Length: 278
Image (cartoon, rainbow, N blue to C red; front, side, top):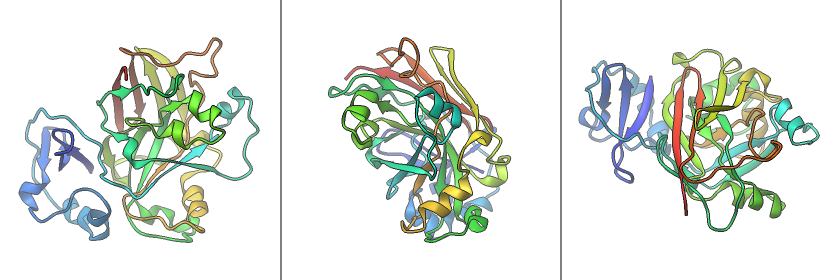
C-alpha cells in the first residue's frame, strides 16, 4: 500500500497511490483524520488496507505523506564510507540528532536556500515512519511498530551545522526535509537492509549506496532510541546517508538556485526538488 497526501500546500487530502491513479480516502472515509498520530493510533492504516477501490487519474501535487509528527530523529555517521569521506571516527553507538518538523516539505516542492547560512548540501536517506507508540522496544519487535517507509533528503546547511558546533539549526531550516513521494507499507517492499539509494544533482550521480551498509540497522535504531525516548505514531526516523555528499568533495560542491536534486530509493520512489533562492 502506498499512502499519500495530495493537493495544494496546506490543504492536502489523504489518498492511496495506485497504478491507474489516486484513491481519495476522504470520499470513502469522511470521518478519517489526516495522516498523523491519530490516524495511526486509531487503526486507520488497517481500515484503509481493506479498501478495494481503483485509482482515478488525477494530476495533483503530492505533499509530505505525514502531517505534524511529534519529532524527526536522524542518524549521523551511519554509513562507513560517509564517515570516512568526512574524516570522522565511526561511532560506537548510534549518533542521534533532531530536525524540526516544520522543515518537512513535499516530494516536488522547492528547497529554499536560507539567508543565514551557505554551503547547502544533500543527503538521501531511508525514512521510517512509526505506526505505534512504544518505549523500550526490543529489536525483535521493532517491525511491529513501523507503519511504513519513505525517502527523505536530509538537506543540510553546512556553514551553520559545523559553525554552531551542534546540528539542529543547520538541519532545520524551512524546506530542509523533503519527504515522500509516499509512505510504503512493509508488505510492498523488500528487506529494509537491501535497498539502493541514489542522489543526482542536475542529472549527475552524486550518491550511490545500499541500506545494507548501515552501521546500525532499523531494528537496532528503534530499540536504542526507545530505551528512554517514547516514540509516537507518525514519528519519523531518518537513518543516515551514504557517501557522496557535496561538502567533502574536492573542491566542495553545494547547491545553488536552479539546481534540481533527485533522491531515489528503489521500491519507494523519488524526491525531485528544484532549488530556489531565499
